[in-house]
View 1 (tube, rainbow, N blue to C red):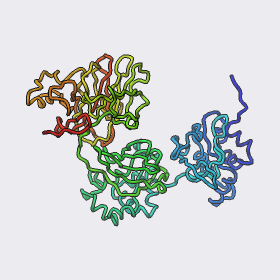
View 2 (view 1 turned 60 degrees about the vertical axis):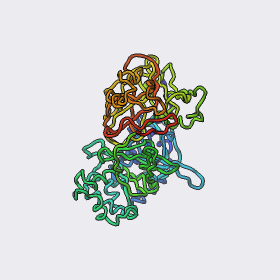
View 3 (view 1 turned 180 degrees about the vertical axis):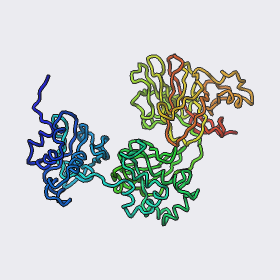
View 4 (view 1 turned 180 degrees about the horizontal axis):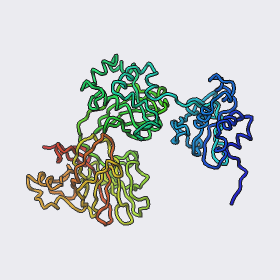
Length: 541
C-alpha cells in the first residue's frame, strides 16, 4: 500500500483558482467536477480565466451562469480525453484518441515573438504543458476550444470556392453520405470520412469551367448516381474512410478510397505531401501536391483537404513486375551495394534492417544476409538475399512488393538451387485479401528435376508447362542451378503495394537464396525477358 499527496485534476483547479476559477465554475455547474476528481486516466485542456472571459464575450454572455448546462457539459467533454496524453504524443496532426465530445483534436506548433508553443485545433496555444496530477495530465490553454459545427457536406457547400465540387457531390448523392453525423452512421467504418476536394480554380485550370463541363467529361452512363458511372467513381475517388489528417496520410504508402478497389498513394517530399506520385517499372508518374494551408479542416464527421491539381482514377492495364528482391531502400544506401567483391560481399540483415522485409521471429540464432556475388555466378544485378528458415531460424519471411497494377498474375520465384527448406507463398497474409498460392517451391529442385532434356529446342515450353523456366540471361542453356519456379496465380484486386510471405513448410532448416520475384499477367509471355548479371534484359529472340 502506498499513499500520495498528489491532488487529482479537480483538486488542482481548486488549488489554483487565480488561473482556473472560471473553469472550476464550469465543472461544478455542469456536474463534471466529481468524475475529474475521481481516480482514472484523463487529459484536460484547461482554458484560463482570461480565455473563458474572452469566450463568453464572443458568444454574447456576461457570465457562466447565463450558459445552458448542456452547453457547459459539451464544453468540458470537448476539452477532455479519457487517457493520459503528454506533449510527447503531440504531432503535426490529430491526436489518436477522440475527445469525450466525439471529435478529434488537432495539434501543431506556432512561433509568436520568437517563442514556439504547441497549438490545439489551430484555436489555442498551450501556455503550460504536462501538469501531472493524481489522475491525469492538464495542458493550460490561452483560448477556449470550440468544436466543429458543420458536417463535411455543409463545410464544403459553405465555401464558395468549392461550388463545382459541391454540385458533383449532390449529383452523385455523396452529399447525403457526407451529411451524416458519426452517431447516425449505419456503417461504423464510415463514421468519419476524409475528403480531398478540388476548388473551382483547380477545375478551371484542368479545363472544367463549370459542373456541366465536368459532367460532360465524366458521366459515361448519364446517371451520376450509378456506381458504374465515371462521375460517381471520380467523386468516390476523392473520399476515403476514416479521418486522415495530413500527418496520417504521410505515415502510409497508400490509402483506400470509396471507389471500389482503388487507392491513392502518398509520400512526403521535403515539406510537400504528394499524392499519386508513383514509379512503375522505372517510369516516374508525377503526382500532385496537397494544399497544406487549406487542408486539415475538422468537420463533425471527418476532415477536409484541398489539392492543387485536378486528379482522377488512373486507368492502367496489368503490367509485369520483374522485381529484384534486393532492391530495398536501406540496402541501396550501403556503400557496398552491388559493388563486386572478391570473392563476395556479405552484409547481415535482421528484422530491423529493412522496412520492406519482415521476419517471423526476432530471436533467430542464425543470421540472414544480403550478398554481392562474384561475376562467375548468374544472379541478376550480381546480388541475392540469403534468408535463414527453419529450426532456430525464422518460420517465414515477408517482403513488401513495389506497386502492382490490379489484375491476374502468374507468380515466379527466381533463385539458385540449394539444400534449403521448401516454402509456400501467401499474398497479403493476415488481411481480408489473403491468398495462399498452391505450388510448393522445393528449393533443392533445379531445371533437371522435371526430367526434361534441356538440349531439346522445345525445352522452354516443356519447362513452363511443368512450372519451371530459365530466367538467368548469361547462363548457358544447360545450366540447371539458376531457375524460376511457378508458385501459383494471384488475383491482385487493388493497384497498390502488396506483401508476399514465404513460409517454411518442409520442417527443415537452411537458408533459401532468392534473387527475383516475377509477377507476370497471365496473358503475357512468361519465359522472357531474362536477366543478365548486370541487370539488363534479354528479350525473346
